[in-house]
Image 1 (cartoon, rainbow, N blue to C red):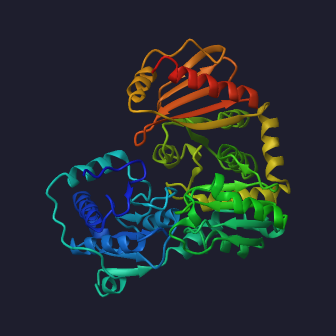
Image 2 (cartoon, rainbow, N blue to C red):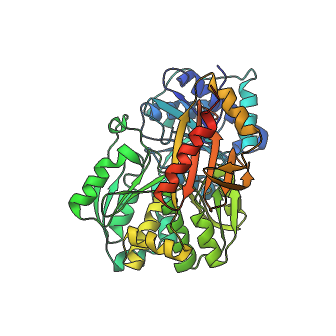
Length: 476
């Protein structure tokens, strides 16, 4: 079975494709890549999240690196993706291997490689690693190993990435604002890696914090560790019960954020992105434009126009957004799937920092999340409501639908003229009433992802109905 890398590494079912033998194969391929690029001598950081066997898989990968002569710094516990990225850059390492499947269901594990930049590996890097995997590569170890055995090797050192990362947050976040206006906050760690990070940071700066699920559960309480939907029901209830001003959450590896308002209602990630951008640009005085994916809200565009800032549109994926942040053109890059990367920080998503900035915005303004979002609508001149659906395709329908999306776009859609199209990533229809619909076939599942934005609920429903008719009527 061929091992392939997606936008965030290789992911597969545990005990099916994701095995100790395959982890060693990938580690051996990464070791060879590091030799080719001259980064092997710098060593690698190896870490993991809280899912089943993730620590054992990490120790297995570390052992394979050591057998290939690549020095290893092994984290002393499961660690957040942004803290790992920070440690790679500040430590001058050749890269990092993180055993995580992020927000995917518990039955999955994954291996994410980040090069010396700390960012998610770009396509040319993962393509090269896949090429190496197709060759006859030498795997020098076998099966699992114990951490104690690894630490007997002089090339392996146990490290903590927590303290340097939290120190960096101290430099970015307005901690004086948090301390001057203490907030009552509920934090849901979702059994993941943000425990001891986000709660501790907020507690250290005067917040009253109630913490949920701050322990390891490889099955994530029976949910997918994604900070939205059913996974946040307990957080919503805890916010209501405790009269907290906000609920904050991160996914399994803490690169994604989730926000619940004081009424216990989930706050759409697009709105959080707009709030964070406006706060940093308008109230903190951060310079630069904003990068957003093609599937992300145009509320960001309206706010950027109000501030005289540029908008940089990219395909879906944080690695595309990070390019504009790295160039210094954008103060942040964000996408609708709860991911934000920040200027002068790591070039990967940081859910912990995103949550901390939301808390800062509340403390500085003295307003609620809902009030701040209503303020954004006033600044933009109208409301922005968005929706997202995964439309499942049968084996017979899939090629017909893909052919339709690749063909001539419609002249009208949902009763109004199509005034523009965008094929940055899939097909995006820009409508005459300032609404839009985007259709993007998944590269890994038999689904078409639909994204839409309108200015009232009725119009949003019309866009969803029109999308189903466009895709499926007459297609079989």
